[in-house]
Image (cartoon, rainbow over all chains, first blue to last red):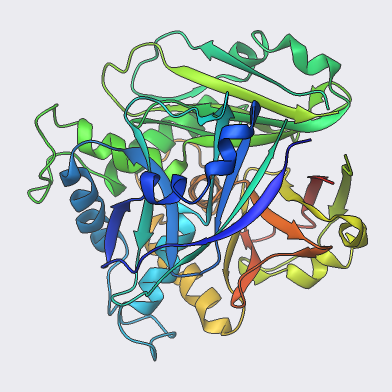
Length: 140
Length: 140
Length: 140
């Protein structure tokens, strides 16, 4: 079994959705040695998320941010967990709606993404800092 | 390790949620050879999703479609990504909320689903066409 | 390959979000034997969910429940699937939004969670009973 784990760090991002496919792959050259397998990317935080979506038009990422802010607004009168700022509780909920991890199949040393697919970081805090991802590859 | 990958194609579906367990398994007879493992189904598109939910009453799927259209409506005035039709941007958001992949445990050659569980395709475009799934099985 | 499957049962929980990290790990001592791998926890039900979020302040779980009840309310006039009670159809939708499974990396015999991360059960029924999880570990 050709399996490994590696912790990688992302450069700090502004609040919103960011295409991170290249930034991730630049730190995971080991994938080139995997014939068939799975990349599991796990974000070790509770206020940012990982998802897969369109890699071309940046307005898709803008619209994600605008709409999720309608679905999970700040300053709802019923929030009890609000002492870390108005962006805090919504960030937790957004993180669980989009999810803490993605799995991407590996085929012949490359991520087997659809032609329009890329990896998104959802940064849900105003100042989230440098996020840490744990990559686990299980394959052969 | 008893692992393999296989790309399968689904028949075109109307917009909404569809139970696809049988259509998927008919194309993955190789699962019968796996003692313990994991099926990872990955949709190679950014405007359709995979999820697991109730396999019995078709009104559950109807209600999924009706309610998600309230949560992520078309024609919101703030959408910037709208040149592919009013169903386009909501489809991207719905795809990431429900997710691009599912993982189902395999036990003794069968998917180990709960008695009421089935695999759903969420088709979020009005005319999404034939969707391609990449199945990866890792097991023994 | 150091892989296994095990079905575990959770004690019945009230409707809402519950931190279950300890209750799960107490039943999965076998993880201590895994050097590098992945824990896949799969819930065999369609009206409860698994997610990962903050393990410290219990008001985060309270706010999850309050807000998701706004996003997916009971008694919407368009629900068709309503003969099992007003909590039934919303429970199905919530289950698919948060997801039926989580994957957590294992490193040197322990779950490699971030310092603030814990495993949540989302119990979306008023009386969901004892939920069954299927744990699959694939590792070495």
